[in-house]
Length: 498
Image (tube, rainbow, N blue to C red):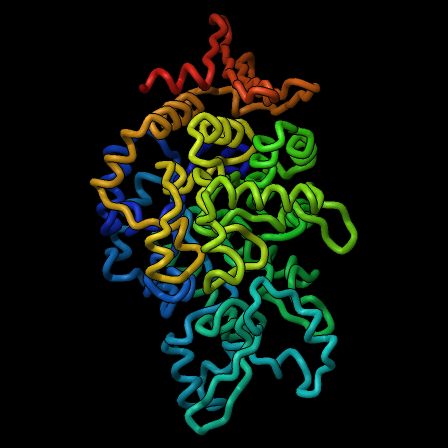
């Protein structure tokens, strides 16, 4: 089944323990209980040991294992029997605490794992020109090389794209290829249907380049996607960057993220102007996963310009967007963004989408309606499903910026959140969206000075979202063949749960 044929879907993206408060079995119970009927599939964020590492599971010590605190592979298989599962394949790096890297520290070049890891000298000459090093694209302000001491006292500059605890893999080496194959094997054995290639844009390094999204990177992604496809899996490529890059990647893989959508939806609601959003949806890939919020922050670079090429939003529009987010969150997003927090990123604002909209229920429901009417598979983050505010307390405990949008919940907290009117209205909206066959068909949109419409039609089935831009009042319309047309305003939907 192609992604296009599979597009009329809604997926949940979640950490296992941060939603269920416990294990894979607990999450399975929750999906079949209070969350029943909402999702067609589940993206499980890293469940490899350790789930509480420096980067919340994205620094695995063993990518082929399940953290025992969550359960085991049998639990994954049981969940996969009921819900198509997506799992992260972290292709760029692994933990400095992994047995393989510990062996390298012990034995140096004599370790069989020495070829698995990337050092500066494997890419650059020792006397590499400063401009070559300066050209490397940095997702974070930390150094991309970290001098790490071997047992014999030598300090080796290992490549660390993200943190000093995440050692980059040499994916072009035989050891790197074997490592990735072992992950694919384990996923295949345990029923994973989708894999997300995490940080794939950084996987190929080449002297004299930005070491990001090179022609060789496209080849690497395409080859890995073909290997997954041969095993019956589909690949989602995770890249934050210039919007044309997403368009180019989409032609070479199964699926890409629509990371431009979150800032464009916010801009539309803040400015009451949908021109930028409409332009993007005119040219955006259709084989995409749409998001508003994720386990990361709200991407900004995805709508920005690049090397003189215009972005989807101008610099002043992006500046206004960021400042409005900070104002709406009453400054809490500033505590988690930029140099205010560790593990920072250069391309995002760390803030829950609910707080980015100032906890305005009506605007939040409209933002979700727009997402659900955009082409692609709709993926909803667990904190967004429950309209969670910024978790400032967790941020203050961990000092990790992204944690402001990664709350720890349990069955009781989920039950309480499900009673909130905005959450009940969102669940009704999701249920309605899943019931309409129009989304199996063709998408179109219309923009006038005062109104914006997103429309779908399929074999006589029709559905549309009509937005009055000045007031942000919105109405859903739908009709099945040989049936009366129906309509429901988002205000009426919200009032129905009060």
